[in-house]
Length: 239
Image (cartoon, rainbow, N blue to C red; front, side, top):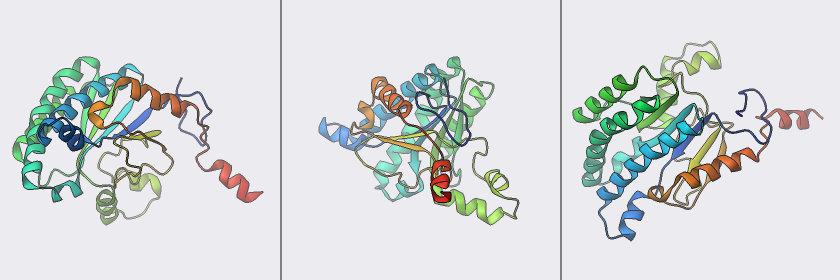
């Protein structure tokens, strides 16, 4: 059973749209005597598995915050290794997720990304374009504030829906639930426009340790919450 995207959702519903903010790859690798690149490689494999799980669990849209505009400030060695991971794993993701009916869609700026990464993105999007069971938005070279700035520069009026059409992926719905791993309690410039009424769930497990059981526990926690999306607050203020 899924919530309806209106002013409220009763307890017991499961989310239709979920965003994941993976964190902890480098810490996970360091604790095991592995390189940071090995941590990112493991993280990419976990992302593919959790995307498959999301589809099986009935989620319609899954957003994965994989590389932010702020991540360019990391060391050149780590950035290069991350780009290598993306170049390899977009193709692997397409091969693993296409049979599940999952469509892959990049969310972010293409400017500045290496050619081999863009080619891998284009391949994954084309190979899965016909799928409609679930859409996986991969936020790559993405920043929530930058998305708003880019949209604002082109906005000429028309209200909220007109502004939404100027976002990087207008078809992306607001996440019902945002999950962040790694023990941090912040969104880190992720999904700034979309997160206004999202439920937040934070877990201490590092992303490579984030299992299907952890995922299902987050969904179950969402099911205990009654969502009013501001309606109750407005009623309280009026009363």
